[in-house]
Image (cartoon, rainbow, N blue to C red; front, side, top):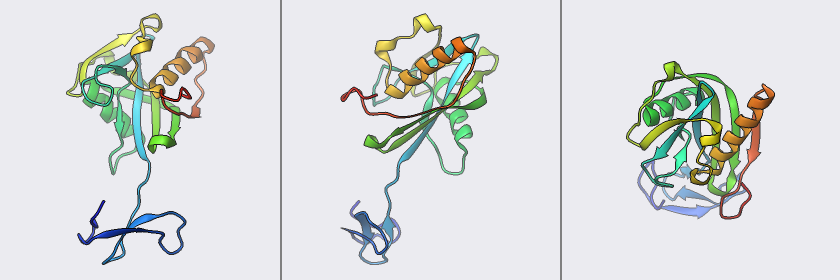
Length: 182
């Protein structure tokens, strides 16, 4: 970012007074441009012991399967964001049950928050960001075609937790498929 979002003047990289990191600071008004992690919220939508997955119609990971999820918007809760993303990507309404999985992904500056939810009336479609959406039983999951490590981890947690009949919250830090740490 070369120019200040507040006044339009040039920015420079420096450590602001009282800070410990280099930030972009406006040379005119002193506005500090902070870069913070992005929050992704989504839903593990369930209907009759099947999970709803969406095949991505956008990059990154075009054509691969994911849970309905996306960036949280200003002025919404994480639960509202998860329900909105499910509506946008899968044309589905969900009833949020609980916070289920949270993933720190520091390498790309993201936090994934996934809620366990019930798909209302089993109805869904495919929104503009999805090529198709489908309900999968455990044995049908396209494990080698999942878009993100967070999706794989969430599904594995769900199917294991379902065997126990208990659904605790899961918190993990993930790497990337490239370094095989998550």
